[in-house]
Length: 109
Length: 116
Image (tube, rainbow over all chains, first blue to last red; front, side, top):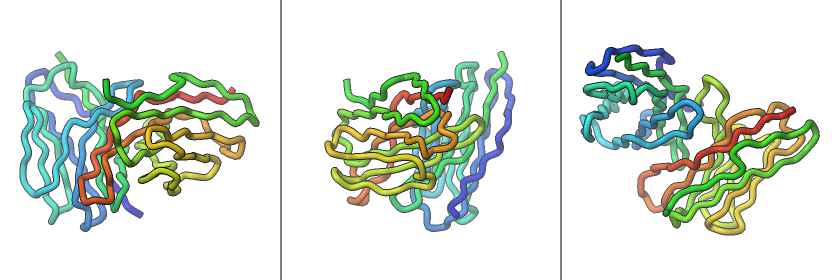
């Protein structure tokens, strides 16, 4: 069984702080990793993808991948109230994605 | 505009009825997927299709059926055999997954199905 684990939260951070979201996965063979943002009642939106060990930055978002430890994380700098959402981690297994249950992020102004 | 459309946005079904959810994409993507999301849970894969006229079962295919007669369309039928169909249904698509390209999936707006 391919598993993707996330802390369900909620993770509460003050406006302007760094939010750190974590995800672990079970299959060492996975090569592709994705972060989706999902607002309440809406569909998931792809915000980051990462394929190699290390960091990948895009604006206020940084994805970090450590294949040896089988974890992937998402950092959100200068968090804004508009970042309040559920963040889904997805891991590719063969030609399919397996999703974690998501972490609820709340940014308080 | 390129994108994925799903209809209807809300759907109500009576016990014993089959209903069909529509998913259309104009992104020229080869692969299409159907997921189900229940409150507080992640997305679970129902069916997926990598090419026209071919599709595979996902993790929770029982009580569902699909067809892929056109590249642009991947309708999902929720049959009366699905015992607990109330959920948020999401369709996604991605570029060819067989050529070694990475599997970025993009989602439609979803259909919320409620059984009365």
